[in-house]
Image (cartoon, rainbow, N blue to C red):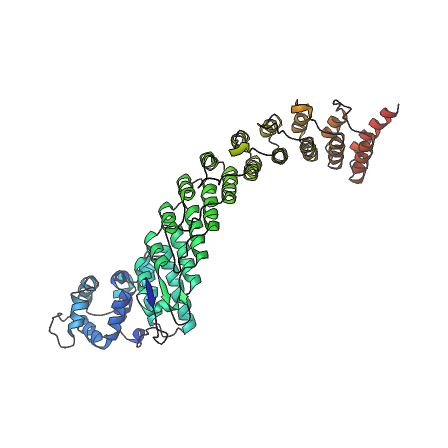
Length: 492
């Protein structure tokens, strides 16, 4: 849809609409029956206001409405009495005739501010706000524009298609701008208002200054929002959308959407995005798959992970070794042993598995979290290509355990029969002792002093001196005395 708005056509304004002493009209227009009013209806009513005012005066005085009454021309009768606004008058006229006046009529029956269904985004209140903005003479152009844009955004958020259509069907659409359209699109997507989304996507407002329409960035952000909110049908709509100029979703948008859906565990949306191939051949990239796998791992969505690991969108595109490693780190950091085990057992195309560096970093995360189960699993793992945790990885893990006082983890790191006889090193023991002494971890200090591994791996004299200095500098008197006594025994 393309809406052309000439620049010389001003936004309609009222000839003193609220200054008239017909309070019942104002109150009703903003009350329940505004549901039956469109912008076109109100515009027509305002153009015929002098005759219509006489019409209301006759109603108020109890006169019957007849087709041939002098103050009413054919349009007023057809439109107001028997046409589109008939529901309006079927509710109002009996009440007006019963009261024969204005006193108290609107306060309880038609004043929308007292009703429970009048939240800021209710369609009922939005119509009232729109009419008020149209005909309130106190607003300057800047204020009017700001109010219109807010009403439009609220309408998109609440799914009020009538208000959106009213903007596009009248010259007030020229007061919108691209940020307003794209903000409205995001809110409509978030709340699952498919019809509003479709209308916003296919509409272009053409003005002499610019074309107002959804941009490629807005389209991509909308797709990501739909994926994160689980709006499957809207995801399909956005993937099928081609904007003016042949613009469609780009690879970055697909990747971000896939990551969002994977993070939330929306398997069906992940499948849709993996299958998506746009007109120009754009698909999810390998980097997109890697990021999605890491997000799914962090939140423990095993089924989504299995889907991502099993298939890419096209031949030759799949999770990489880096993606597998990053997912392992996410799982270890979040303490998900089952996900860690799944990733350790995974061998991708061409024999790709988690890297040794990945095992080392995952071990460090598990130690930091004091997660014995994952630490033990990682230490006992030998991958298909013989990759295991390295000596350097064990050293860093032991240092972390010593610094934080995790005695059971430290014992595990020192006692496990490591693959290929790889153990911690002298340097690792020395540094761990220094951190334990500095942080007052006396149990860890005692443990490390008694370590005797093969190949003379033990705390060295230099390591003892450094640890004693750390204890002294940090006021760890008890540990300093313990280390001094130990060093004296070595010299005997």
